Length: 125
Image 1 (cartoon, rainbow, N blue to C red):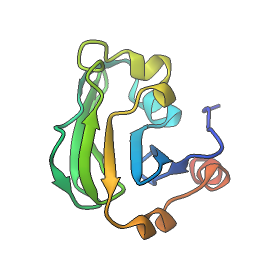
Image 2 (tube, rainbow, N blue to C red):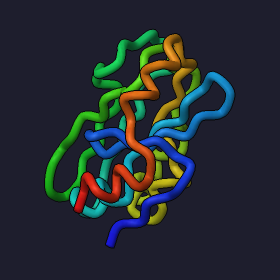
Image 3 (tube, rainbow, N blue to C red):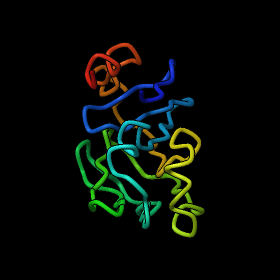
Image 4 (cartoon, helix red, strand yellow):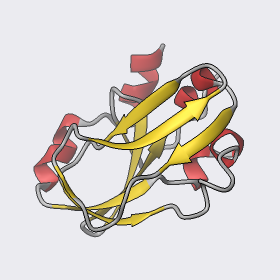
């Protein structure tokens, strides 16, 4: 059974979102990393880039597949996880401790389209 944390937002593309002020930290869920298998490569994108909701930002490759990670929120990427390219397996070990990128949100109402923990639990059931 996948680990799902209360207090986070979740997208239908299996990203988790932790909001701190106007900054959203975005990573992949435990369900996503479990489905992908062993992660062997991560490109977290670039800071300083302005993105629109739904844009491909990061790339994760596993032994099974390569997948784009799409931002569920619009804004400017303010940070990327500098440690993941050298330690991609950290996403398998604890996906909730390893964000991919952070976005300074330009439209907080976009959060309304995301799920809470209960909604995501039902979504993946």
